[in-house]
Length: 379
Image (cartoon, rainbow, N blue to C red; front, side, top):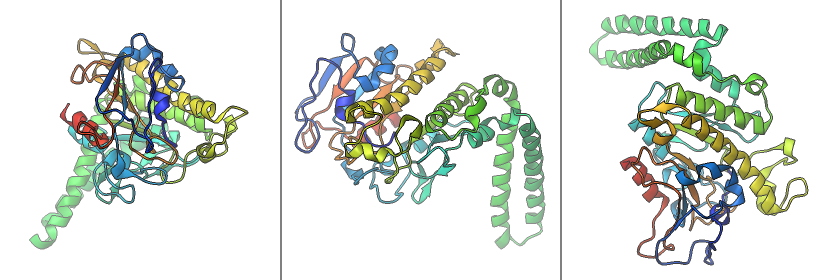
């Protein structure tokens, strides 16, 4: 989510966040608290039913990605915010957890009309990944094979890819070796796409059963409804087995923060400079926007908990990470990057229901967001 997540917005009741002059914590030792008898802060209140699955991470730094606003690809890549310098953590996890669609990237752009942006994820250096910001485009990309006229188009594409792969192979066979390699790489690409089409065809019964009924949200440009539709599509893609990794973004990086005109917020940039929404205080306005997101996260988690998987549910084997690409504020300092984890990956991570406050920046036992990402890759 854009525009920052203040440390106070993930601090549970009964505990005081003691902020240093730079914006990080002041302690030299790890603080670990149980959430059992503590209330979640207002921004996270919709997540209360999931409290025993939640881990609140406070005090992780990310200074390497420091910027005046969004850390851009640096938020998920642990590198400078200025440029695309390598693969981001979500892309690395997708590579480790292959599926029909290895990595699904959906979101809300700078406004409800933006179709695609490239602001947050990357496959490799100088290879940013596209985030689909249009629910209509997202639905067609993932569920078009079972959607009326979309099915006919899907079948045509499948047949075309099969033909192209064979045609390129035949053409390559007639070329000298020096030229053959280039065409063979094209043939491999077509074969890969054709194989994915066949995998989708084999899953059509499951896809049809779990395809979300978006109604008017499929074509809406109202920001809050776009975000709602994208969460529904992402959840359905996970449940249908189309993907194992989803990145959901809200806001477009750089100095674009999103707009919610239906709530009286023409531009969320103003909130970062003390503005407000509909007569609320600045803090109340931020909480309102955060709650839009945490409510959708709670709904996603509930749907996953209803799907049996192994000896438990899909949620038991899932990890949801909620954070801001702008770290701890509109103008971030990144001595502390507040992060919310929901789930434990089937026990591969320590059980939730905890608040962890790491030692201050510069202390011997301090940790960074890179430490978290390395842990996720190891898990």
